[in-house]
Length: 175
Picture 1 (cartoon, rainbow, N blue to C red):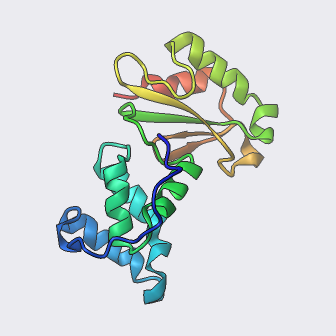
Picture 2: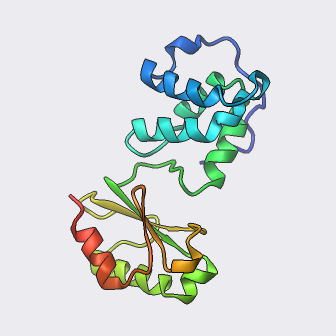
Picture 3: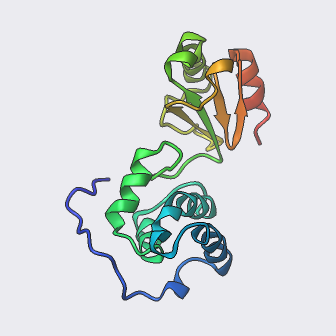
């Protein structure tokens, strides 16, 4: 998905009360309230997370456009955030996400072995989803758990010092 030639204009014409569900708007508004009124765009990351979760784990361009309208910011600015951070997905994902850290500490402690193990045992490479849709394997930058590497983020739960067998147990316990 390329966003290179999109305009930087802010859409002030759309009715914000028609965007998202009332619950999502309320949740985004709680984050907006943490910032001065002129900095409402600072809530872009929590807004992306809330909308992604409500959409089955991924973001469409239309949803990102809606976030831009809601936060009074150019759509391009929302796309920049969504494409920079690995926690946002722009394509449908499996029911679960298995995110293996590939930073130097994790790499030195066996993250490449974990990725290779998952590739061979489950038949998926980073960025792919199992044939049954059970999980998507992602290779991500630093999970901030260098001390207890290798680290894996399974959905929203951190797991550290994992061996291939320990990772298998986590994956096998997924629905």
